[in-house]
Amino acid sequence: MTRTLALDLSEPNFSIRQYAICLQGIIWREALRFLHQRERFVAALIRPLVWLAIFAAGFRQVLGVSIIPPYETYVLYEVYIAAGLITMIQLFNGMQSSLSMVYDREMGNMRTLLVSPFPRWYLLSSKLIAGTLVSILQVYAFLAIAWFWEIEPPAIGYLAVLPALILSGMMLGALGMLISSVSRQLENFAGVMNFVIFPMFFASSALYPLWRVRESSPLLYYVCQFNPFTHAVELTRFSLYGQVNWLSLAVVFGCTVAFMVGAILAYDPSRGLLVRRGDTGGAP
Amino acid sequence: MMHGTLSSNSVALSVQGVSHSYGRRKALENVSFTLTPSTFTVLLGLNGAGKSTLFSLITRLYATQQGRISILGHDIERSPGAALRLLGTVFQSRTLDLDLSVMQNLLYHAALHGIGKHEARLRSADALARIALSDRDADKVRSLSGGQMRRLEIARALLHRPRLLVLDEPTVGLDINSRADIISRAHQLLSEGVCVLWATHLVDEVQDQDDVIILHHGRILAHAPGPAVVAKVGKATDIRTAFRQMIKEADPANEAA
Image (cartoon, rainbow over the protein chains, first blue to last red):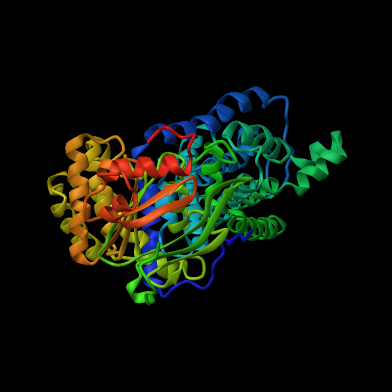
């Protein structure tokens, strides 16, 4: 059985302007959908705000945070977990939009995209970029509200965090697409929640500094260190304060490239349709 | 089965030796046919005959497992971009974005074909005028009727001026007037040189002048103009009885048609 890879670099004679038009169109559509679906926007904000307003308030006295970079003073627990919650927004958004790309959930809109004559790798990358930009809008909305919880990074941080958000958003979106392309078990969001989102989130520096994890479990510490989500959190945390965590930057960049290539190679548009029709196929 | 040997320019769609399986179950087996420009071909088959699988292969939603498919001489696997540029598609399930307006759906499609905004607006306005939806351009697609949505999907599929239009069960869920309207509009495309492949299980959608491909259990039972298909079956007087008879002969256990 032959299998055509989604990565096709030989196609066809489009100008750079036409590639730009295509990308712009995909981003424009995602933005319009985002604006039209206010419930989705609110839901995406509620989750981190619940963590911030309830969880962080409850644990403020239990989990003290010492002075660790990039912070130059003791910080409130709310301030510490803000970077983790920002990355959590991107994690949920990336997984959700990637799943819908694989399982064709949006009234078959992915099919419209896939019959475009542009190379498939370009279409999928554009869709990931568009999804990432939507998640960035959510992040800035969260930051605006988080101001009232004394999460007040320096002004430059709001700008400096942007490249970090683009990179981490792409990484998490590509990871979601890769996972749902290669794993039969993770075919719905509940599965992804249990087996991907929660383990990645909790085994990271999102809620507690890693030195604290090492004190209680050296093994878990190394697990956290190998978790790309940890590095996405740290990249975001440092950039919010106008600094660069070079190790995290390298890890996130490397993972983004690896996940993107893997996701594009593994993407099979027939998969979502087959699963929906009962796997090996009732008659389509 | 084939209309003779034709050069790539005179072949709108070529399907040669295509087989496709879902696990162990074969959905298509050695399917071969060619379609010429300005022809209207009805791909007729019962549910489960393999129509949608074939449709998904032609549109490259599925990778071709065996055989070759080319559109105007462009192999769908080797030159997918060139092939898809010449292909317009109307899927069985609705693929319009319900939350966007009529015009926004068309502009999005234009962008996916690299058509600039100015040109896209001109083409979209023209397309909407043709399907009598100019006054609805700012309305959300959600507010359109089923027939209007289908007309819009066909207009959208033609926006990039394809030479081959494939439609998968395009009249499903439509009332009798909307069905007649859609069929009539699709036939009008022949005068513009477009080749139309119309997949359906509804035998009454076949018109006398149409070519017919009868697909059953993944195999082609007949490919000829409608009257020739009828003549091929001894006792048949029309395409309906010819279709039923062919299926019965191919699968005696099958009483449905």
